[in-house]
Amino acid sequence: MRTRKKEKKDLQKIVDIDRVVHEPARLLILSYLYVVESADFLFLLRQTNLTKGNLSSHLMKLEKAGYVNIEKKFVEKIPRTLLSLTKEGRKAFHEYSQRMKKIVRDLPG
View 1 (cartoon, helix red, strand yellow):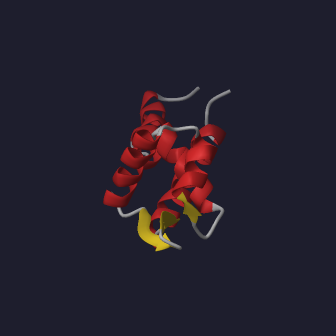
View 2: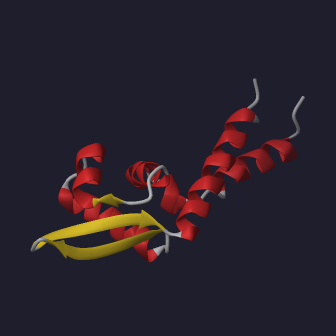
């Protein structure tokens, strides 16, 4: 039988997860960026089905956390926004995914 102390320790693992990564829209964005070197704003817009404003807002939060690099440039006079994970962002996503796997694996039953 599990002790209360052990259960509390197990639940603490959930409380300690990275909230920046854990938010569903940001998790989706990070998931796409994790598997590519970079992606443009329109690609992420189509893939995530977020609105422009919502995607922009989440990208700003990820940039503020140091997880995403946002590069704005012109290609043949057309503005283009390229997005990529920073080293810290790649690490945060990896640690989050490992932690979540462990939490699920360690659930009772």
